[in-house]
Figure 1 (cartoon, rainbow, N blue to C red):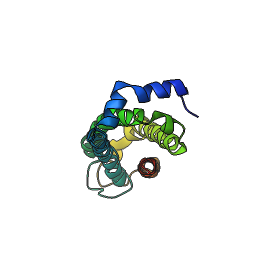
Figure 2: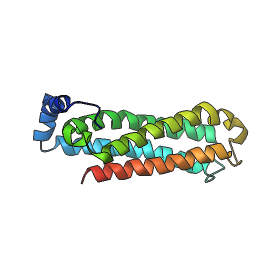
Figure 3: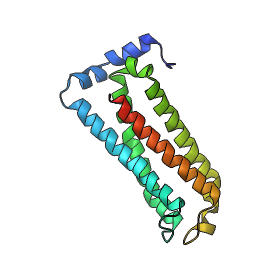
Figure 4: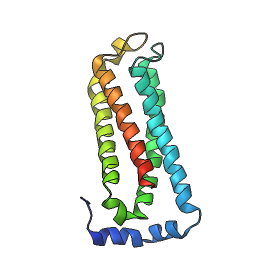
Amino acid sequence: MALFTNEVLQELENSAWAVTIRQSAWLYPALEVVHLVGMVLLAGAAFLFDLRLLGFGRELPVKALANHLLSWSRRGLLLVVPSGGLLFITDAQALAFAPTFWLKMTLLVLAGLNALVFHQYTFASAATWNTNITAPRAAKATAAFSVVLWLGIIICGRWLAY
């Protein structure tokens, strides 16, 4: 199921970066904190936006809320990707064959595709349901799917720690 060969995974684990992280008393925990802060920004902002789409806070303009909250999601992504990559290389062989890791990656891809579909199609009509109007069913469905995906991603991330 792994995308890499055992040799490549072993090389990742033996890289100077991975060895340094594993040997440091504080580097791995610091990366975990960076990863968690990134997840809070990424998933938290997305979750709050999803709640608006699901009908909470209809007095808040959808477009302004998207500009504000989703910019924080993008910042969170800038923390999550590199910290996640560095965490991965410290235990690449085990993670590459862990079903929970691949479930998390699959859910991340689905969350990205869900956001892409929303922004390419549904959000284009947001001006007609921007304030004090219920979002269309497509927006609500995308938001509900997003909430489920992000909860799954968070759960998988926690399972990987054990």
